[in-house]
Length: 436
Image: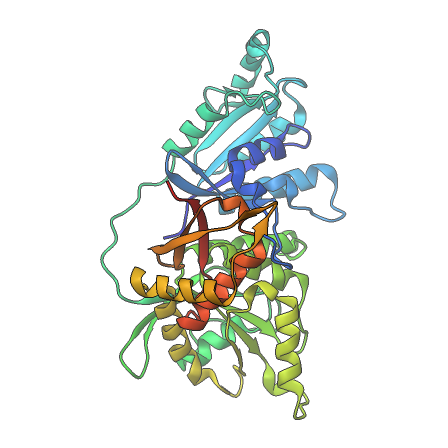
């Protein structure tokens, strides 16, 4: 199920990014030693009171050469489109400004909850300064301080209370998968080719898809799928066409709601930075991934073309070494018949459970093959491992001291697990924990 989305809006210099980082907590600071994982600080996952949500800092959505006030307006409009709850941030230091009032007028158009947060209330004496902001018409302002980390908890309590109710969903065995990628890589064409009908508008103009469209279908073996064709760009033309980060945001919601993600690349254009953005998000979300290279029919080929292109993908997406690659043509339907079976296989791998006894046989064999390292005279001891979750498969490895397990040895254990069990298409997570 897609997570609720919270957007922070307001004029520049009110402290949006500081509060964004405070709300995101430790998640924003996670560092992975795998080269090539792109993190974008404007859009992240956060959690409060056991409720997870997506958080947008609209100030990070650059609008190119647009005038100052126009950028503020456009960022507010993006928040209205994308968010379930909007945090409208102002500053007690500067007081109520014309720019604040301009943003407020934009937000009056929405029926979504708008919570007013007054930042830079750094001491109790300044709390009286928040009363001017009642004039904006959004109810009680919430005084906060990004500098002193005060008031953010109360603000988050209010944010979470405004989340949409979670409906009890009926049991559904369908495999949900989404197609993500830059505009004009051929996502809609792949959808139509798989369905055998023009279910989604196809055009050579980037951004034709206006919204995410869920489509159910059944393959030749009677297995049911729900396919989500994500919108790379929608509405208000120029605003979004100039905002590469916006299309990444749109893909995120579909990724949250998917079991399997098809990362679609354009064979004609090769790999772009934005491809790495969206692929990195899918990887971090722990989804099963298939890399689909579309428009393969348009490429002049020799004996080594496919092998060379695959090597380029492996070099550029080192963190997706587990993802299978398929070269297709939506136009000629070349190899498209392979996709349903590949989706079912990586979905099964994503849900795979390994018995603890079998897992530990693999771990013990790995230790015998490559003994644990010694750090500062102290040797790492691995006692046992157990699987604690699926989607993605997650393993806890109990050791004497987690600090002694270097990233390289952790990767070695992951590789041994992959050799023993079929986890093609899915990331696997290893958690180091001290045995008590």
